[in-house]
Image (cartoon, rainbow, N blue to C red; front, side, top):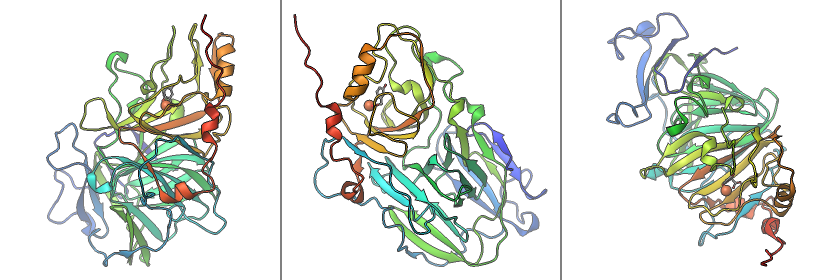
Length: 427
Ligand SMILES: O=C(O)Cc1cc(O)ccc1O
Ligand SMILES: [Fe+2]
């Protein structure tokens, strides 16, 4: 059982071995037990104090000790390689990707579905789907390109990270900062889910404005693991994602050897069931920004580089209101996935594990069946239950990857969900 420390982005001090954490300074002349002190920066040294995120790690060996990286030959679909030609304005949807039929770990089972900025621009987001059926045993991964938001859909994940051990199941999420090494175990033998890889400013809790001091995702419900390490002197592969490409090197020890750490850059997890969902108690439903769990701002105020938004169980009580998502065209680009249940705007074809893309200005909204049902529903209080959909909304239009466009799971007939609406009849 892992212990966790509650809170989001707090300054934490934790040691797996008593006495490992230096007192009163970050970089003593000789850290306890011969440990090596290392600063891991998530923001520029000079970022304003309220934005500044970094941690100090005390480890068995410096992470600088490694042989040169060579190109990694695996994980053929874990690539930002996008189709040639102009980005089409079409709406796209993919069926849930099949589980692998040969032993495949989390890294080799990653498929990048879409990306909207080059990692080197330090902006934008990529959305991946993982399908795995093998543990990472003597292999770790590190992403130099961004923080990783894990959104499991099937099967639990154990993320053994440099800063501690995180257990998540479908319905929970985990956020692993850029540069934090980890390996993934699959307690259920297999797992599938989504990853939002954020190249831009770090995910944080959204401002609440007139909502007040409480609500949406409450900070105390985020959990950061206590220090944990493994002392394994044996060949250990370290795969790194660096500016879109994968690289590999072999260490003679596990890189998960941080005995103690302190700081405010650390992995955390959150149970989406704890989200304090807010909605209308009169008429119309608010914009889905009311469901934002985490946001990564861009340089334009109010225009997110990435918003992680959920559609959780909730009561629908709006009077004289079309209650599902309305028809809309959005300057923001919307990637959606489904963790479980059914999404109230899509009666068919959007199964758990599926992924959809409604880019900049693409007309979308309820499919005909959802529109028909909601237009005639009796408007008594009704609970949408047993469901959890999510959206990674970004100001940058997404480009689907080449393999996503060539995939047999791309639904060729997606546009037909908006076919056959009866024409309005004027008096
Ligand atoms: O497209 C979607 O299904 C997501 C969504 C839901 C909603 O209620 C309003 C806008 C929006 O983009
Ligand atoms: Fe939308």
